[in-house]
Image (spheres, rainbow, N blue to C red):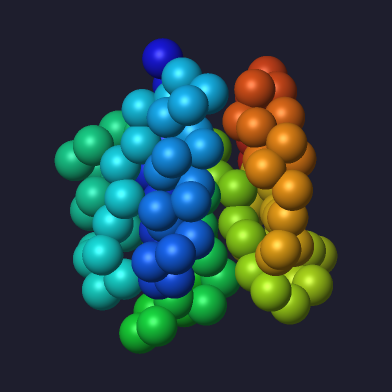
Length: 122
């Protein structure tokens, strides 16, 4: 069972995604909006991090940079989400995929079940 970590500050979205993903057989770990996301990724070792670009007090792109620059967690699969279409910027920062909110649950599940593409060197 794949472990999905949610770094999202909208509690309604967290509850919805947690229910949806658990029903589909995923293990789900959700973070508080102010948690140290890279430290949580190191601690919990998720298969996939679902990372909101705009967390209440944190910048998802900076978090993405921190993850990609870390020797321990640089290869963590990250799907970034946002209500604004910042796909290109997220991909430049090293995201594996991007979903524009609101997205269809099936789109997320399909992404989570896709085989991981190897990261290209920085």
